[in-house]
Length: 382
Image (cartoon, rainbow, N blue to C red; front, side, top):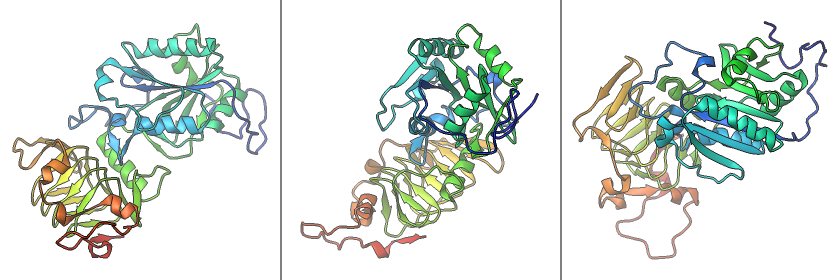
């Protein structure tokens, strides 16, 4: 197999060592697969089995405010893809949420057979004048240059072009829709590995096969090692706070960290070392969250030390020991309904992130008693 990169010789033609001329692609679509269906041709790893701490795929859960599925859809849209189709396997239909931002020509469809669904969608694309399509597993997060990949595929004149990185093959292809109409999808994708040219991705890649990959992605994003950024506003260097979050004046947030939408941190809590507290979470008095991900709508109880872990409701995955614990005591960990409801009537001791986002503009009404919290007083460390 001859593996060549962007400036190498392939199909008998020498490509000049310069960036290919870019024009707006005509007839370009994308198929994003959520769930099973592409496993036989995906790269495997020793940690590819999903951990029981999660009932849904990593691609469907919020990571720093938004799901990987939604972020991938936006990458396709920014690359000028005309039609984006998300195919969801039946067993994952419950986990997929609508995108927070509406996208024109985006469709989400639940299918019983993902392979047959992709094949049919390629045929539909061809009839609609879509000449080429990206086919991608939503389990993959990559910042590959999609337009460069498309032009590489078009110049190679192959039915399908597969991508790979230093660790092996990636579940991202570009396919000629017309040529693929009468081919079996799995055979087509498998044959792409032996094609004359494979596209080498040198940009950021995360296969999202294990919760450990989620923690690596969060750390890389908060430290600026990849393009992805958290939702919300960076109120201090390395500290991202989303809309509606409330942080007690005696709580500490040490950069880098992310506090999600409508999350609530109580008195004497400490959030540190690339931790992310997702939307609707409630962290109780005196608890320390270190190098951990607290997934959406999770209540973490009083005076706990959560370190090197992923927490989802009453389940905690210790990444250091690779052990999952299910907590039966609801006062320790549980899924909550609303962080605001959990907090009761303690609102006078909190500030809302929206006040910081609007630069703490003076209120028109009379100040409340006790005196309102002031920005410099909180122990948020950049």
